[in-house]
Length: 81
Image (cartoon, rainbow, N blue to C red):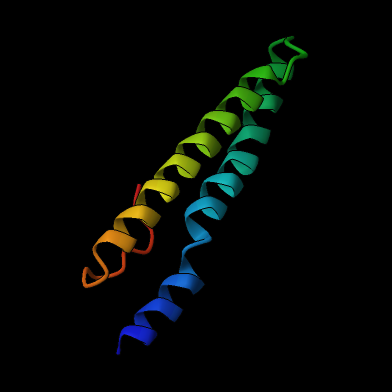
């Protein structure tokens, strides 16, 4: 049954990066709109937020990959921040 955990984990693992990326796009556009209404023309805060979330999830996924390799009998974690 180990193969089923691997396949399920491989299927859901990308969502750890996809969800924060899409949330940043959705809420980032709202932030950009509000900033433009307030007279700011820069999108730098949204870019910084996106880069922080992306870097955080990349590091987290890297550490999880090494943890799962070292502990193959642990249950697969799907989405967790």
